[in-house]
Amino acid sequence: MGEKLTDMKIFQPKLFTELKDYNAKRFANDVVAGIIVAIIALPLSIALAIASGVSPERGLYTAIVAGFVIALLGGSKVNISGPTAAFATIVAGIVAQYDISGLAIATVMAGIILILMGICRFGALIKYIPATITTGFTSGIAVTIVIGQLKDFFGLTFAEGTVAVETTEKLSAVVSSFGTLNWQSLLVGVLSLVILALWPKISKKIPGSLVVVILGAAVVKLFDINVNTIGDLYTITNTPPKFALPAFSFAAVRQLVPSAFTIAVLAAIESLLSCVVSDGMINDKHNSNTELIAQGAGNIFSGLFGGIPATGAIARTAANVKNGGRTPVSGIVHAVVLLLILVVLMPYAAWIPMPVIAAILIMVAYNMCEWRKFVKICKTAPKSDIAVLIITFVLTVVFDLVVAIEIGLLAALILFMKRMTDVTNIRRWTETDTISDDMGRLKNIPLNTQVYEINGPMFFATSDIVSEIPIRPDVKAVIFRMRNIPALDISALYSLEDMCEHFKNKGITVIFSHVNEQPMSVMKKSGFYDNVGEENFLPNIDDALEYAGKLTGIKVSR
Image 1 (cartoon, rainbow, N blue to C red):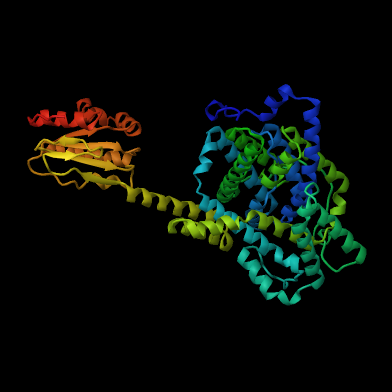
Image 2: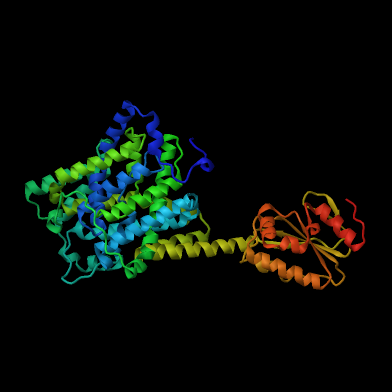
């Protein structure tokens, strides 16, 4: 399965390791795969740019620039990067509020954040984002994409002065202007959807999106059908990407920080998920930190060359693998082919009907919505998980992705702490001379000794568990059995310190039995271990009981 995770360097691009034994046969396979992926990426890049509120060529700029840079520097052999549907809503919001220059700043900032995440080895931390949150915002994004395409799908005409930036505003505008429905536009959109749905059964080599783009443009042009085309709404250019430094300012940077973090987190999640999927397809192991650094560099260059945020695209990556791509060369070829298409064929993109673009995006939304997983969580998960899922989904649709991720993570964190608090408890051993432990062995407890067993992690939410322990007046020693405490934080440690100080003032000796590695490390680093005394830490309950017996003058037999 490749390198072990612990052996991986922070930055080790797969391209340079793969070129060591590269040959003509592998190059031919990569070229074929790269060309096919470029053909798949062409209509998607145009459609996703339009959905993001920018001109069509910016989607190709993203696939060309970011796709090239990420393939060159990435930690996966086969990951294909470019614009994806996950960014459409947040990008459209940034463009509406801050224009293209604001989007460029946010994209560059997100790239810097991704590089820092890779350098700090955050690649493995992405797995700590709950599935309920990723499913919630993915499904929410799918719904927002569909709502955003209803205008072009039905050929509606919004009233002059209509402001439709937020999803709820778009939905309201669609409802209020539904009387302007264009039946020709609806027919083109429905036929495009039917072709997209059925085409995989006809051919898996030629992408359905390319088929509907060509057929739709030809039919509308030949029969002079009354529908809007890309050329009616946008000025098409075949100019290659050009470097343009956005006007950075402290005020703009400060305002765009939340959006940049959201883009970075989304890019990290999508790209690493794409890497995991492709690892299983080619029996390899990606370098997650290298991939994050590459995604960061790709987004920086994309922002500086007129593109939009980019990340690993699962569908395009899978197509790359299925068509023989096995090294990053296929990703580089895909970018070069798209550049040639941009220069030579981009003017013809003006003929593409908007209902066709809408149909492509609706199909993209359907494929990404994970509705089966959504339904399964609702049927089988605990109520708290369902609540996080619904909250994230609703906030994504009603507000935006920034709010959804922030509130979703906060809700998940609070619920997680609640669960950990529920499973953490303290149990006092029975007040008899002889008791049986959980292995059935009899233990003799000295009369002037009490034994408490703590179960579960001790952290700030459970730190008060030791604050109100009832102690008999005759007790001279208290044993805390800690074998079932996997983790201890500083808040809980402070509670232990207060407790020990309280018992010390009463002349009671505190003894700790079977302290695990992480809690012991915290205790030693803070000085707690030395303050309590090394002699008061025993490896097991038998030794702790015997030591307590010596302190109280009562011999304990094992």
